[in-house]
Image (cartoon, rainbow, N blue to C red; front, side, top):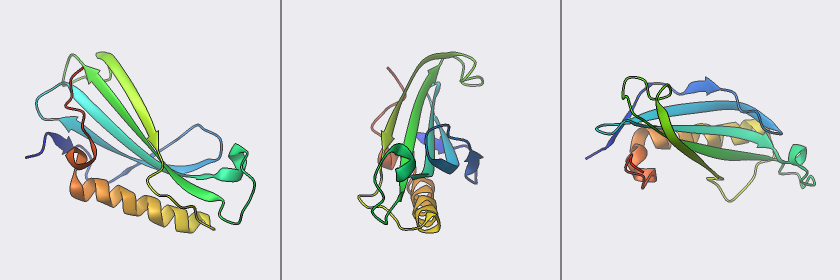
Length: 127
């Protein structure tokens, strides 16, 4: 049984303000009983813009997961009392082109949508 419900039926365009980041997409999940929300943002970035030497595989995918706990389920961001985040690289490889990396990003977005947040998260929506 799932404890997390996907809010938007389609990934939402997002902006990531870190070096080398390209177009990002986000998914938002809310906890079924706790005043908690998880936002998963996946984006392509250019490794050379972060100081890595070019090896021909300059594009990578990064995943940011933001955890938010509020006091009002109807206004989680307005009643935030705790938040945290993690960064991960869901793949052990990099890509030669931005398009290849975007395809992998989109694959990971579909996995989150198809499998649900509880498959990836151990957080139960409480602190």
